[in-house]
Image 1 (cartoon, rainbow, N blue to C red):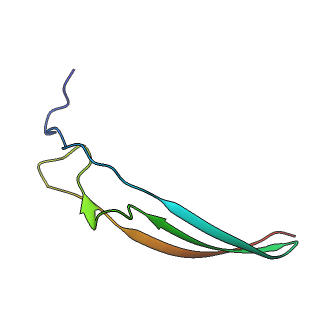
Image 2: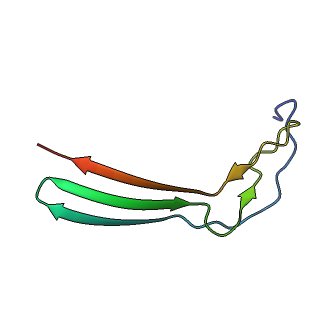
Image 3: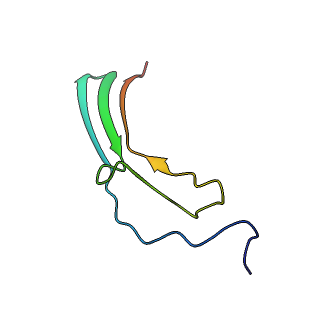
Length: 64
């Protein structure tokens, strides 16, 4: 079954990474990167040519 409006996306290889540091028993800081091998790539291409970009995020988690 083929969805209308979609074309095949080319094959790709990507990498994600997460580095986290526990500051104390209840606090963690993390640096996360997604799609690190290329600036952007298509996934299940649509006619609109949307592409998934590289992203980096910094997070802080606190637990009581």
